[in-house]
Amino acid sequence: MLSLKNLWVEYGEKVVLERISLEIAEKSFVSIIGPSGAGKSSLLRVILGQEKPTRGSISLDGAPLPTECGPDRGVVFQRYSVFPHLTVLGNVLLGVEFAASPFTARLFGSARRAAVAEAEAMLEQVGLADSRHLYPAQMSGGMQQRLAIAQALIKRPRILLLDEPFGALDPGIRGDMHGLITRLWREHGLTIIMVTHDIKEAFGLGTRVLTLDKRRHDPHAPQRYGAGVVYDLELTRKVQQVHAEPGMAEIEQTSGITIDTIGNN
Amino acid sequence: MRWVTAQPTRRGALLLGAAPLLVLALGYVVAAAARHADNPADKILPLPGAMAAAMAGLLFEPDQLSGQYLFWADTVASLWRLGAGLGIATLSALLVGLALGALPPVRSTLGPLVTGIAVIPPIALLPILFIVFGLGETAKVALIVIGVAPFMMRDVAGHIGALPREQVVKALTLGANSWGVILRVALPQALPRLFEALRLSLGPAWVFLISAEAIAADVGLGYRIFLVRRYLAMDVIIPYVAWIALLAVLMDLALTFGSRRLFGWAYLGAR
Image (cartoon, rainbow over all chains, first blue to last red; front, side, top):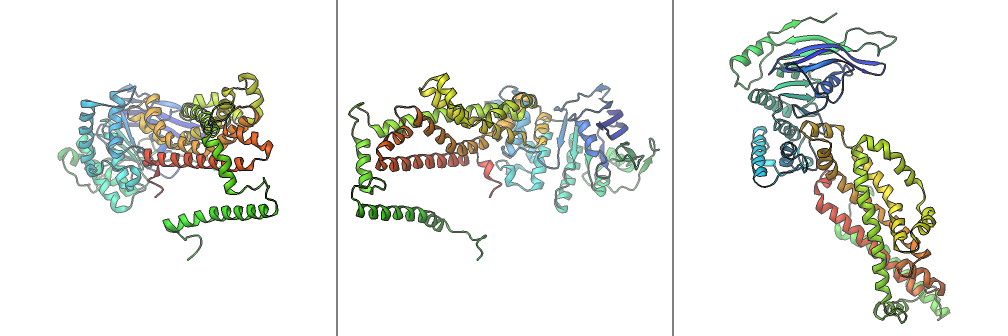
């Protein structure tokens, strides 16, 4: 569905990403891991449209993807994903209001009631139904991330991008969030691309794990070469199970993997 | 107990806060009484009774020349100038600050201009204002605006510019356009900061108001103080200064209270 062709990201002299060519299938859950500074977040920002690649192209179903952020791609960041001045309900409503009313970005009367019902249904799904009148500052980090997910999903994006979404959470909450995101991914038929530092999380959640790292390194000019995809692991057993039993919420053990070495020098 | 962690109770804090004021008042009365014991006609430190008598004339008796109750006429004139100046400054700070903070091209265009105006000492512009606008109300209001607006603009713009980039990106992924980001993301978060900037601008605004009134006016709190200075009329000057202080404190409190009331979300993290 999403196709990246020979993508390069350079900041002046510094090459961050080079020769990234990927085909991401619909309804897959792609985890991206790699050492710090390997360009994981840069890749995510390029797919999000926040940054333009210096070379190469991205296309969605064959059509070039607009290089601007838009409602077709949702995002959850590690922090600052929710608006501190809006309540939980207001945060989720915002997406509906922007779409329905480009000038005032607010809804009134029956349109608002319908939007509130929709937002409350979404909050129910992420387990925040009882917190609708709280402000983000009154909630824990885990609840804020649940809110950020609900806020993104109300736009019904095809692609959801997660930038270390659970990195700042404690392990217990992180486990709950893994269950939540897996359930939502299946229920909403999302394509998820997640950047993470946690290898266990990457394999536990993903149907495919990409590792970004530098393929070549020049000790005299460490900026000369950028990172590429050095491992591309399709977690095949999980894919089969997902297709066989789409409703299941358990995170699968990742034993059957095939290592794709295409593109590795 | 250590001094750095000691937390006075609410009542204790009130008493502690009132103590220096009482000491100051008492010290004044003692000093005034001592001077009057030496010289009953002393004008420099008038006794409270003399101040009350002098103020009663301004408060309750119409002026023979103009027929106005001078104290109230002064207060209304000064507050009008202050209100007009601060109102224009606040409104322009909101508009310009939002545009500067939220729209990088506007920041590149107008940023240097606002910075340039902000570094000019406003009092140095007063002659220009008097020449351009004459000696009427416009020049006094304009001085207050020029004095406080650039600071407020830069403060609001800085605050909006420092909002996490993630918020803007997130709003765009929720379907917002630039206008939507300004209206629903930048504006609500600018308002508490604007109130704070306005509160901090009260002091400078009073300085510019009194300066302008001292130089050219025929009514106003600052005008009266500088007029009666010629007769060493401390019995009028001191109550006037106290009245200005009271007005300034009330405005400060009203802004603090209003901001907490209107923008409760902005104070949640501080608890």
